Image 1 (cartoon, helix red, strand yellow):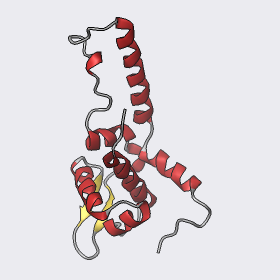
Image 2 (cartoon, rainbow, N blue to C red; image 1 turned 30 degrees about the vertical axis):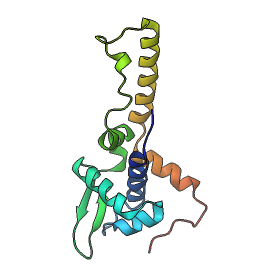
Image 3 (cartoon, helix red, strand yellow; image 1 turned 120 degrees about the vertical axis):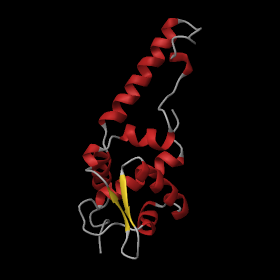
Length: 144
């Protein structure tokens, strides 16, 4: 399984929005880009995809920005990856009609896929944001 910068940056953007979850004012994309080291033009594309997938809401105008559209504890990493990258571990060898190799190999890849999907499905954006918060030096994250 390989996650491109699309998936990596999209998750980082959602983590940043999680740190701001519940604030009255939406977060501007320039601030997300700066804090997460994401090129702003690329971030705009990702935010559009995340908005269409229902993870983010956007507000236009000078006081506009982006915010999570639902609680971060309700956003599974697997759902975000699939929205940004497509199917997770789409493996032809698991397709019964195409399986030409030994059954043991297909069973092994099926178990690998299930394990990965299980971890991604039970991990939420809230979980990742909490890990991120704990990894920051004291006082490193501030809001103005």
